[in-house]
Image (cartoon, rainbow, N blue to C red; front, side, top):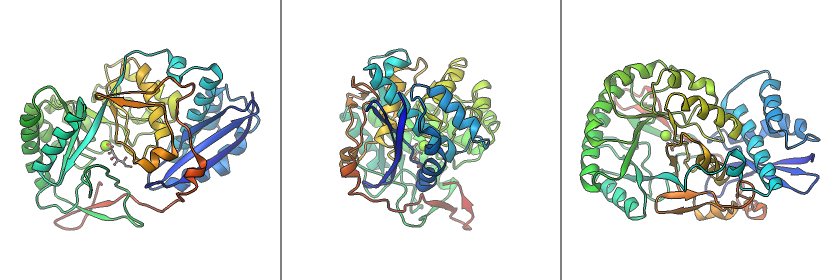
Length: 403
Ligand code: GCO
Ligand code: MG
C-alpha cells in the first residue's frame, strides 16, 4: 500500500478543529486529530508545508518508521506543534492499519483489557450551591466520576466555569479575554466546596478537581491536605510542571492523589515525575503527545511505577482524538480514567463516530479503524474562526499569572 495524498481540514463547528486525512492507493483512508487550542493554524501549516510532502509514496503500514522519520528527521525535537502534527499522522496511520486488518484499533494494540472505559464528566457552577446541583445531575446521568469546578466569591471569571453549565469553551474570544485571580480566595473556597459536594453526593462517586496550574508548590501542598477528608480521586495540575521536582514538596505533605500532563508532549516531560513516583496519574493524550505510538511508551514507563493513565479529553480535542483515546484506554493495562467533555451537536455532525456512553463508561465500538470519520461537506459549512484561550492576572496588582 502507498500513501497517495494527504490533506488538512480546518473547521469550526462551535470551536476550531484541525484534522489530517491520509489517502492510499488501495482506497483506504485514515484521519487524525491535530488540534492545538489557540494555535491551530501553526499545526495546519506544519503539516501542509513540512510533513505532507514527506508522506507521499510511503507505505502507511510502517507506522513506527514514519514516526521516527518525522521525530528524528525534523532535527528540532519535541514541542506541542511538532508533536501534534506527528500525532495526527500516527493516528491516521493506525486508523488505516486497523481498517486494512478489518479490526477495531484496540485489537491491534493487544485487545480489550476491560469491558468499558470509565470517564469523568464536568460539573460546574457559579457558586457552591449550583455546583452541588450539577454534580448530582451528572450522577443522575450515570457518571461514576465527576470533576467539580466552581466560581469563587470575589473573583469574576474562574477557570472551568462558563456561561452555560452544559458546554464550556475556554477559547472564547477573538483576542485573549482576561480573568482575575486570588490564591487566598480560591484556597478559602475550595475545601468548603468539596465538603458540601461530598456530603451531597455520598462516598461512592469519584470526585476530581482541576487547579489549572495556579498554585505554588507549598500552596498546592496545603490544598491537597485540606482536601484529604473528602477523598478526591485526584487533584489535577496543582502547580506548573516545567520543573518536575516541584512535585516533591506537594507529595511530602499530602495523600491526595496527583494528576498532571495535559500540556506535556513527550515522555521527557514526565520522566522524572514518573520515575520518582511524584504523581499518580499521567494525563498526556493522543493528539498532544505524539499519537498512539508515543502514548504507549509513556504508559509503559508509568506502569513500572504504578502510575495510571487519565488522558485529557476536553472539547478542544476533537472526536477523532476521543475515538483513538478510547481504543487506547480499552487496551492499556495501567488505565486509570478518561476525561469526557461532551462535544456539541454541530461537532458530532462533522465527526460521525462509533463510540458510545452508557452508565459512566464509554466504548470505542467495533468498527474497523478508530471508528471516527469526518463529513467534509458539513465541515465546510463551519470555516475557521480565530479564538484564543484567556489570560489570568493577579487581582491585587494585575501581574500576569498562570491561566
Ligand atoms: C482539562 C483542561 C482543559 C484545558 C483546555 C485548554 O482538564 O480539561 O484543563 O479545560 O483548559 O483543554 O485547551
Ligand atoms: Mg486540566
